[in-house]
Length: 329
Image (cartoon, rainbow, N blue to C red; front, side, top):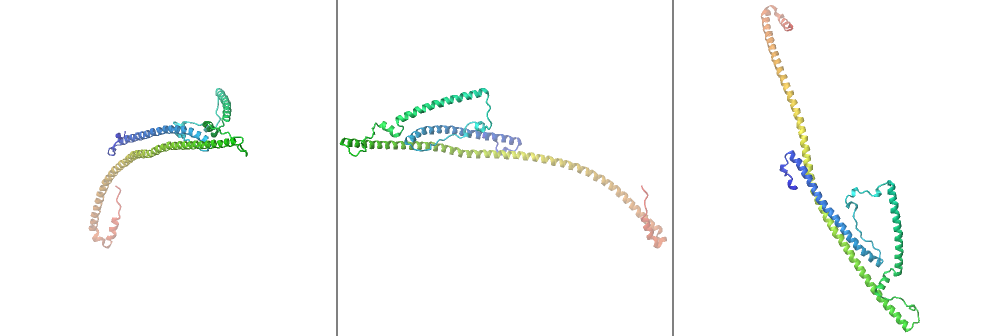
Protein backbone atom coordinates (compact mmCIF):
# COMPACT_ATOMS: atom_id res chain seq x y z
CA UNK A 1 0.00 0.00 0.00
CA UNK A 2 1.00 3.65 -0.18
CA UNK A 3 1.79 3.57 3.55
CA UNK A 4 4.74 1.28 2.76
CA UNK A 5 6.40 3.95 0.63
CA UNK A 6 9.45 5.65 2.08
CA UNK A 7 9.51 9.38 2.69
CA UNK A 8 11.84 11.50 0.56
CA UNK A 9 14.15 12.03 3.55
CA UNK A 10 14.69 8.26 3.82
CA UNK A 11 15.87 7.79 0.23
CA UNK A 12 19.56 8.28 0.97
CA UNK A 13 20.72 4.66 0.64
CA UNK A 14 20.89 2.77 -2.62
CA UNK A 15 18.95 -0.23 -1.26
CA UNK A 16 16.16 2.05 -0.02
CA UNK A 17 15.78 3.64 -3.44
CA UNK A 18 15.63 0.22 -5.16
CA UNK A 19 12.90 -0.87 -2.73
CA UNK A 20 11.05 2.41 -3.36
CA UNK A 21 11.07 1.72 -7.12
CA UNK A 22 9.42 -1.69 -6.65
CA UNK A 23 6.87 -0.27 -4.19
CA UNK A 24 5.97 2.48 -6.66
CA UNK A 25 5.56 -0.05 -9.49
CA UNK A 26 3.28 -2.12 -7.27
CA UNK A 27 1.26 1.00 -6.49
CA UNK A 28 0.89 1.69 -10.22
CA UNK A 29 -0.41 -1.87 -10.75
CA UNK A 30 -2.95 -1.43 -7.96
CA UNK A 31 -4.22 1.89 -9.34
CA UNK A 32 -4.62 0.40 -12.82
CA UNK A 33 -6.31 -2.75 -11.50
CA UNK A 34 -8.80 -0.70 -9.47
CA UNK A 35 -9.68 1.43 -12.48
CA UNK A 36 -9.94 -1.62 -14.75
CA UNK A 37 -12.55 -3.11 -12.37
CA UNK A 38 -14.66 0.03 -12.86
CA UNK A 39 -14.22 -0.20 -16.64
CA UNK A 40 -15.35 -3.84 -16.70
CA UNK A 41 -18.37 -2.93 -14.58
CA UNK A 42 -19.23 -0.10 -16.98
CA UNK A 43 -19.02 -2.54 -19.90
CA UNK A 44 -21.49 -4.83 -18.08
CA UNK A 45 -23.75 -1.83 -17.44
CA UNK A 46 -23.56 -0.97 -21.12
CA UNK A 47 -24.73 -4.48 -22.00
CA UNK A 48 -27.71 -4.07 -19.67
CA UNK A 49 -28.55 -0.68 -21.19
CA UNK A 50 -28.29 -2.14 -24.70
CA UNK A 51 -30.78 -4.85 -23.70
CA UNK A 52 -33.17 -2.17 -22.42
CA UNK A 53 -32.89 -0.17 -25.64
CA UNK A 54 -33.40 -3.30 -27.77
CA UNK A 55 -36.51 -4.17 -25.76
CA UNK A 56 -37.97 -0.72 -26.33
CA UNK A 57 -36.99 -0.81 -30.00
CA UNK A 58 -39.17 -3.89 -30.48
CA UNK A 59 -42.29 -1.95 -29.51
CA UNK A 60 -41.08 1.16 -31.38
CA UNK A 61 -40.61 -0.93 -34.54
CA UNK A 62 -44.18 -2.25 -34.21
CA UNK A 63 -45.50 1.32 -33.96
CA UNK A 64 -43.42 2.41 -36.97
CA UNK A 65 -44.81 -0.44 -39.02
CA UNK A 66 -48.37 0.39 -37.96
CA UNK A 67 -47.89 4.07 -38.81
CA UNK A 68 -46.13 3.16 -42.07
CA UNK A 69 -43.32 5.67 -41.57
CA UNK A 70 -39.59 5.45 -42.22
CA UNK A 71 -37.33 5.87 -39.19
CA UNK A 72 -33.84 4.66 -38.31
CA UNK A 73 -33.77 3.13 -34.86
CA UNK A 74 -30.97 3.80 -32.42
CA UNK A 75 -29.21 0.48 -31.95
CA UNK A 76 -26.20 0.79 -29.64
CA UNK A 77 -23.73 -2.08 -29.63
CA UNK A 78 -20.49 -3.14 -28.00
CA UNK A 79 -17.24 -2.13 -29.67
CA UNK A 80 -14.89 -5.04 -30.53
CA UNK A 81 -12.35 -3.84 -27.94
CA UNK A 82 -14.96 -4.12 -25.17
CA UNK A 83 -15.03 -7.92 -25.35
CA UNK A 84 -12.76 -9.76 -22.93
CA UNK A 85 -9.70 -11.14 -24.71
CA UNK A 86 -10.56 -9.45 -28.01
CA UNK A 87 -6.87 -9.15 -28.88
CA UNK A 88 -6.64 -12.95 -29.15
CA UNK A 89 -9.77 -13.38 -31.27
CA UNK A 90 -9.03 -14.04 -34.96
CA UNK A 91 -11.86 -13.25 -37.36
CA UNK A 92 -12.32 -15.39 -40.46
CA UNK A 93 -11.90 -12.30 -42.64
CA UNK A 94 -8.35 -11.89 -41.31
CA UNK A 95 -7.30 -15.26 -42.75
CA UNK A 96 -6.28 -14.77 -46.39
CA UNK A 97 -5.66 -18.44 -47.28
CA UNK A 98 -8.24 -21.16 -47.76
CA UNK A 99 -8.91 -23.11 -44.59
CA UNK A 100 -7.85 -26.75 -44.71
CA UNK A 101 -10.62 -29.17 -43.80
CA UNK A 102 -10.16 -32.81 -42.98
CA UNK A 103 -12.54 -35.44 -44.36
CA UNK A 104 -14.55 -35.45 -41.13
CA UNK A 105 -14.77 -31.65 -41.09
CA UNK A 106 -15.90 -31.56 -44.74
CA UNK A 107 -18.59 -34.14 -44.02
CA UNK A 108 -19.78 -32.12 -41.02
CA UNK A 109 -19.82 -28.89 -43.09
CA UNK A 110 -21.89 -30.56 -45.84
CA UNK A 111 -24.32 -31.91 -43.24
CA UNK A 112 -24.72 -28.43 -41.70
CA UNK A 113 -25.26 -26.95 -45.17
CA UNK A 114 -27.97 -29.51 -45.94
CA UNK A 115 -29.70 -28.79 -42.64
CA UNK A 116 -29.58 -25.05 -43.33
CA UNK A 117 -31.07 -25.57 -46.80
CA UNK A 118 -33.90 -27.67 -45.33
CA UNK A 119 -34.54 -25.04 -42.68
CA UNK A 120 -34.62 -22.31 -45.35
CA UNK A 121 -37.18 -24.20 -47.41
CA UNK A 122 -39.31 -24.76 -44.33
CA UNK A 123 -39.15 -21.05 -43.56
CA UNK A 124 -40.21 -20.24 -47.12
CA UNK A 125 -43.30 -22.38 -46.60
CA UNK A 126 -44.07 -20.62 -43.33
CA UNK A 127 -43.63 -17.25 -45.08
CA UNK A 128 -46.15 -18.27 -47.73
CA UNK A 129 -48.67 -19.18 -45.02
CA UNK A 130 -48.05 -15.88 -43.24
CA UNK A 131 -48.45 -13.91 -46.46
CA UNK A 132 -51.69 -15.70 -47.22
CA UNK A 133 -52.96 -15.01 -43.72
CA UNK A 134 -51.92 -11.37 -44.08
CA UNK A 135 -53.80 -11.12 -47.36
CA UNK A 136 -56.88 -12.59 -45.72
CA UNK A 137 -56.69 -10.08 -42.82
CA UNK A 138 -55.81 -7.11 -45.01
CA UNK A 139 -52.45 -6.36 -43.40
CA UNK A 140 -53.15 -2.65 -42.96
CA UNK A 141 -53.75 -0.46 -39.96
CA UNK A 142 -57.11 0.66 -41.28
CA UNK A 143 -58.48 -2.86 -41.77
CA UNK A 144 -57.23 -4.08 -38.39
CA UNK A 145 -58.64 -1.05 -36.62
CA UNK A 146 -61.87 -1.48 -38.56
CA UNK A 147 -62.23 -5.00 -37.22
CA UNK A 148 -61.29 -3.94 -33.70
CA UNK A 149 -63.89 -1.14 -33.63
CA UNK A 150 -66.58 -3.32 -35.21
CA UNK A 151 -67.41 -0.64 -37.80
CA UNK A 152 -68.92 -1.68 -41.11
CA UNK A 153 -67.37 0.64 -43.68
CA UNK A 154 -68.65 -1.13 -46.75
CA UNK A 155 -69.52 1.57 -49.22
CA UNK A 156 -73.02 1.24 -50.66
CA UNK A 157 -73.08 0.37 -54.35
CA UNK A 158 -75.43 3.27 -55.11
CA UNK A 159 -73.34 5.85 -53.20
CA UNK A 160 -72.18 7.66 -56.34
CA UNK A 161 -75.54 7.42 -58.16
CA UNK A 162 -77.50 10.61 -58.94
CA UNK A 163 -81.12 9.58 -58.32
CA UNK A 164 -81.46 8.10 -54.84
CA UNK A 165 -84.49 7.12 -52.85
CA UNK A 166 -85.02 8.36 -49.33
CA UNK A 167 -83.83 5.04 -47.91
CA UNK A 168 -80.71 5.12 -50.07
CA UNK A 169 -79.96 8.69 -49.02
CA UNK A 170 -80.40 7.63 -45.41
CA UNK A 171 -77.93 4.76 -45.91
CA UNK A 172 -75.46 7.12 -47.56
CA UNK A 173 -75.68 9.60 -44.66
CA UNK A 174 -75.22 6.72 -42.22
CA UNK A 175 -72.15 5.60 -44.19
CA UNK A 176 -70.73 9.14 -44.07
CA UNK A 177 -71.36 9.31 -40.33
CA UNK A 178 -69.69 5.97 -39.70
CA UNK A 179 -66.78 6.94 -41.97
CA UNK A 180 -66.29 10.20 -40.07
CA UNK A 181 -66.44 8.41 -36.73
CA UNK A 182 -64.00 5.82 -38.00
CA UNK A 183 -61.57 8.43 -39.32
CA UNK A 184 -61.75 10.35 -36.04
CA UNK A 185 -61.12 7.19 -34.05
CA UNK A 186 -58.34 6.23 -36.42
CA UNK A 187 -56.74 9.66 -35.98
CA UNK A 188 -57.00 9.29 -32.19
CA UNK A 189 -55.29 5.95 -32.34
CA UNK A 190 -52.61 7.33 -34.68
CA UNK A 191 -51.92 10.19 -32.28
CA UNK A 192 -51.85 7.73 -29.39
CA UNK A 193 -49.28 5.63 -31.25
CA UNK A 194 -47.24 8.74 -32.09
CA UNK A 195 -47.40 9.80 -28.44
CA UNK A 196 -46.27 6.32 -27.34
CA UNK A 197 -43.48 6.36 -29.91
CA UNK A 198 -42.36 9.77 -28.69
CA UNK A 199 -42.40 8.51 -25.12
CA UNK A 200 -40.35 5.45 -26.08
CA UNK A 201 -37.84 7.64 -27.92
CA UNK A 202 -37.56 9.83 -24.83
CA UNK A 203 -37.01 6.77 -22.63
CA UNK A 204 -34.33 5.48 -25.01
CA UNK A 205 -32.64 8.88 -25.04
CA UNK A 206 -32.81 9.00 -21.22
CA UNK A 207 -31.10 5.60 -21.08
CA UNK A 208 -28.39 6.80 -23.47
CA UNK A 209 -27.93 10.09 -21.58
CA UNK A 210 -27.64 8.28 -18.25
CA UNK A 211 -24.99 5.94 -19.65
CA UNK A 212 -23.16 8.84 -21.33
CA UNK A 213 -23.08 10.57 -17.94
CA UNK A 214 -21.49 7.47 -16.39
CA UNK A 215 -19.03 7.28 -19.26
CA UNK A 216 -18.16 10.97 -18.92
CA UNK A 217 -17.55 10.53 -15.18
CA UNK A 218 -15.32 7.54 -15.86
CA UNK A 219 -13.43 9.52 -18.51
CA UNK A 220 -12.77 12.30 -15.97
CA UNK A 221 -11.67 9.69 -13.46
CA UNK A 222 -9.35 8.29 -16.13
CA UNK A 223 -7.62 11.66 -16.32
CA UNK A 224 -7.11 11.64 -12.53
CA UNK A 225 -5.86 8.04 -12.65
CA UNK A 226 -3.44 8.89 -15.47
CA UNK A 227 -2.16 11.89 -13.52
CA UNK A 228 -1.57 9.70 -10.46
CA UNK A 229 0.18 7.03 -12.53
CA UNK A 230 2.34 9.63 -14.28
CA UNK A 231 3.34 11.01 -10.88
CA UNK A 232 4.43 7.55 -9.71
CA UNK A 233 6.22 6.88 -13.01
CA UNK A 234 8.06 10.20 -12.71
CA UNK A 235 9.26 9.21 -9.24
CA UNK A 236 10.39 5.84 -10.59
CA UNK A 237 12.25 7.57 -13.43
CA UNK A 238 13.98 10.00 -11.08
CA UNK A 239 15.00 7.21 -8.70
CA UNK A 240 16.36 5.04 -11.52
CA UNK A 241 18.18 8.07 -12.92
CA UNK A 242 19.75 8.72 -9.52
CA UNK A 243 20.83 5.07 -9.30
CA UNK A 244 22.42 5.20 -12.76
CA UNK A 245 24.15 8.49 -11.97
CA UNK A 246 25.40 7.02 -8.69
CA UNK A 247 26.84 4.03 -10.57
CA UNK A 248 28.45 6.35 -13.15
CA UNK A 249 29.86 8.49 -10.33
CA UNK A 250 31.27 5.41 -8.60
CA UNK A 251 32.92 4.28 -11.85
CA UNK A 252 34.31 7.78 -12.43
CA UNK A 253 35.65 7.96 -8.88
CA UNK A 254 37.23 4.53 -9.38
CA UNK A 255 38.95 5.70 -12.56
CA UNK A 256 40.14 8.86 -10.82
CA UNK A 257 41.43 6.78 -7.89
CA UNK A 258 43.44 4.61 -10.27
CA UNK A 259 44.87 7.70 -11.92
CA UNK A 260 45.67 9.17 -8.48
CA UNK A 261 47.42 5.98 -7.40
CA UNK A 262 49.42 5.96 -10.63
CA UNK A 263 50.31 9.63 -10.10
CA UNK A 264 51.45 8.84 -6.52
CA UNK A 265 53.69 6.08 -7.83
CA UNK A 266 55.08 8.43 -10.48
CA UNK A 267 55.62 11.07 -7.80
CA UNK A 268 57.46 8.62 -5.57
CA UNK A 269 59.63 7.53 -8.49
CA UNK A 270 60.31 11.16 -9.47
CA UNK A 271 61.10 12.04 -5.84
CA UNK A 272 63.61 9.18 -5.68
CA UNK A 273 65.13 10.28 -8.99
CA UNK A 274 65.41 13.88 -7.77
CA UNK A 275 67.06 12.73 -4.54
CA UNK A 276 69.56 10.62 -6.51
CA UNK A 277 70.22 13.55 -8.85
CA UNK A 278 70.75 15.88 -5.90
CA UNK A 279 73.32 13.48 -4.49
CA UNK A 280 75.10 13.36 -7.84
CA UNK A 281 74.85 17.15 -8.11
CA UNK A 282 76.29 17.65 -4.64
CA UNK A 283 79.16 15.27 -5.43
CA UNK A 284 79.81 17.05 -8.73
CA UNK A 285 79.69 20.42 -6.98
CA UNK A 286 82.29 19.25 -4.44
CA UNK A 287 84.59 18.03 -7.23
CA UNK A 288 84.01 21.24 -9.18
CA UNK A 289 84.76 23.45 -6.17
CA UNK A 290 87.87 21.41 -5.44
CA UNK A 291 89.12 21.77 -9.01
CA UNK A 292 88.21 25.46 -9.00
CA UNK A 293 90.14 26.06 -5.79
CA UNK A 294 93.11 24.15 -7.16
CA UNK A 295 92.95 26.18 -10.34
CA UNK A 296 92.98 29.41 -8.39
CA UNK A 297 95.91 28.20 -6.32
CA UNK A 298 97.81 27.21 -9.48
CA UNK A 299 97.04 30.60 -11.01
CA UNK A 300 98.41 32.43 -7.95
CA UNK A 301 101.47 30.21 -7.95
CA UNK A 302 101.97 30.87 -11.67
CA UNK A 303 101.86 34.58 -11.06
CA UNK A 304 104.40 34.30 -8.32
CA UNK A 305 106.77 32.17 -10.41
CA UNK A 306 106.64 33.95 -13.73
CA UNK A 307 105.38 37.47 -13.00
CA UNK A 308 108.82 39.00 -12.96
CA UNK A 309 110.53 36.92 -15.70
CA UNK A 310 107.75 36.75 -18.33
CA UNK A 311 106.93 40.43 -18.50
CA UNK A 312 104.60 41.24 -21.29
CA UNK A 313 104.27 37.57 -22.27
CA UNK A 314 102.71 36.64 -18.92
CA UNK A 315 99.12 37.12 -20.16
CA UNK A 316 99.81 34.74 -23.08
CA UNK A 317 101.25 32.16 -20.71
CA UNK A 318 98.31 32.58 -18.38
CA UNK A 319 95.87 31.87 -21.26
CA UNK A 320 97.80 28.79 -22.33
CA UNK A 321 97.79 27.62 -18.71
CA UNK A 322 93.98 27.88 -18.54
CA UNK A 323 93.60 25.96 -21.82
CA UNK A 324 95.56 23.02 -20.53
CA UNK A 325 93.89 19.63 -20.51
CA UNK A 326 93.39 17.38 -17.53
CA UNK A 327 94.30 13.75 -17.59
CA UNK A 328 91.39 11.33 -17.59
CA UNK A 329 90.36 10.20 -14.13
